[in-house]
Length: 280
Image 1 (cartoon, rainbow, N blue to C red):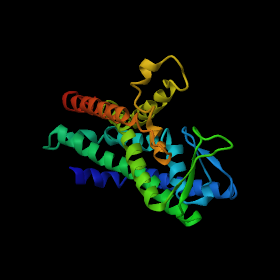
Image 2: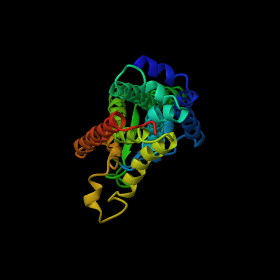
Image 3: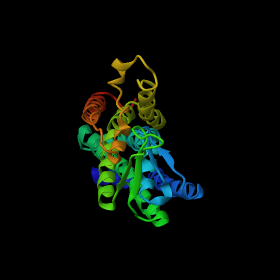
Image 4: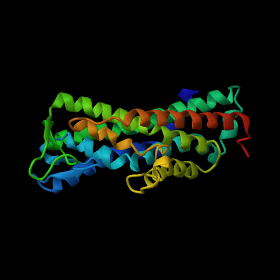
């Protein structure tokens, strides 16, 4: 079943288009950074980090992850998850899929596995292309990073991160951001089992990160109780890997929340798909 799903996914132009756009983003970002001129220090993320992009190609993947983790990557992940079941339903081929002498559960989890791998490939494509393109443009040099939240204008705390440490930090950052897509994936996948319109499922996945941003105590005081249950409020904690000391105290709660959302909504997807008439 998984081989069949792979074949179907790689026959769809949307798969190539989504991955190509993700990779192209790194190229466009690098060109934009090069156009700003050398020696210009930029703010990155909500921490915030200060760095000179042209000083090292490793600045590109940091900026790429920071600028895409709250909408662009969730959109790509929602596209793969939302298309997985609803895409077949919209074309009328889902009835033939479930008519095979294979359990519905096996069909569903085959689709989920392929969609999850494609989502992971999207995150890796963004980071990997950013490292390659950034290195070609600016070189793979050690990167000097200033923690804007603790530094003062007269006393900047500069931390020079060397190549080996930088690759390690980037690897952990990609894993963290990828884990942060679990809740988005699960919601979009569940909605994909309930509708024949893939755009509805895709929009539902993207809505997860939008709602999380709205119910954020940093921007909307007085909602601390709700804030703790929003799945994507702490997706930017990986940026602390590039500061000293690295404050990752909120990471365990964030990862646990991702696991809870994933288990609940994937369980709902299984229940709906195996017990309801999804062909209506």
